[in-house]
Each structure stands twice: as C-alpha cells, then as structure tokens.
Amino acid sequence: MFATLKRTAKLLRAPTQAERDLAYLNEAGDRYDLEARERNLNNRAFNRGLGL
Picture 1 (cartoon, rainbow, N blue to C red):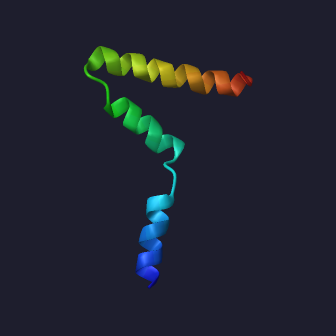
Picture 2: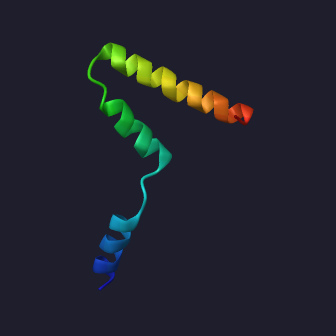
C-alpha cells in the first residue's frame, strides 16, 4: 500500500528548477547552442538577484 502511495506521489511531484535547467541544457544541439543556453541561465539567475 505504501509503495503504491509513494509511487503516485513521485509521479505527481513537479520537477525542481535544477531538474528543469538540466533538461534545458541537455536539449542543446551543439557546443555553441550549449554555451548560449548556459549564458541564458546565468543571465536569468543574475536578473533574479537584482529583483528583475
């Protein structure tokens, strides 16, 4: 019973920000795309720190 409940809870859990960022980076097609995506994530983190 608890195993079923645990499995269901795991399926309903939303992915963390780190998991979403990693999935975004893993979709890069080449090195240049990866670098652009990394800059995008870094700029987003910087803007959050400024409250933008």
